[in-house]
Length: 370
Ligand code: F6R
Image (cartoon, rainbow, N blue to C red):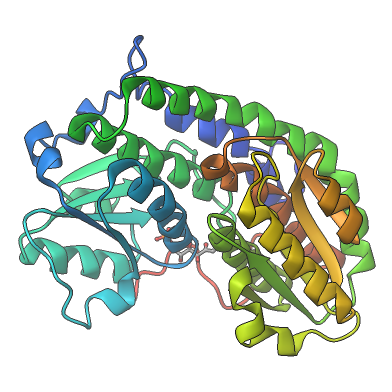
């Protein structure tokens, strides 16, 4: 059932492109307009939504962080992202105009379920983004947008993360469509750009496997890793750090690159591996230059830098010890390609240590206790 792969995680990473294309499928009509009839919430209700709160745990919460950048930009309403287990134990501000988005691969995470129950009791609407048909979270929500990643067996979430980003983006574009906060052309262009992503993800899988594997071999004795990113690269850094710690049992920490000088740089000593997600250099991107200077700062202190960068970025080549290249794409879509080499890297590191990548110690695929 692993279809020739030696682990489910390996198989599922290679299903990243299909997870994206299948989640897009059937969600727009021939004209390119979003069609989310399946969601069963009235357009009028969507039009009234003035705030989104994402509740989720782990990898699914990083989807929320990515989506915040896109949805606030497209829809001009605030998007809060809260770990489901923290949400319920404060007194969150929920109104009938708040849309709570519960993101869960399994649909059974107890913390997320309790958070959505609380939101509904307070009169807010809940939309689930979920990968498991008929599971508890979608059943208890007002509406559901399924991710069509296919069953995810490996404990570490991979393809579901990409599918969740696509689903959250479809929701954002749909809200922009009903609220009129984007031009139709812009929405159609974004859908077209999303449709281009599976081939770009495939290119990363095909072209970067060797350099990733060689890097893992070089790093096999490393005891800790830092991950840095900015803007949508920040949640990608968090996700890369989580993957490596959960399956290779290596101490990792993800940071927003701008935080470096507010503390984390103290951890950098000669030989320390630092993984950096570099934004595109196109269009004189200020963020790109800032992330490049973060690389220079850690390098000046002896760090070994592993960088995920857009093809043709001359600065990445100049300042990084190793580069994992990904094809050009719009910034907001870049997490869909940037996370892929980090998934493969975690897999290779765990394999080199002889670990069972599908069943990391102490972890369960769905966490059904609080
Ligand atoms: C990380 C991972 C976990 C899950 C989290 C939420 O690889 O798998 O962090 O993302 O337990 O699970 P779901 O999405 O099933 O609610």
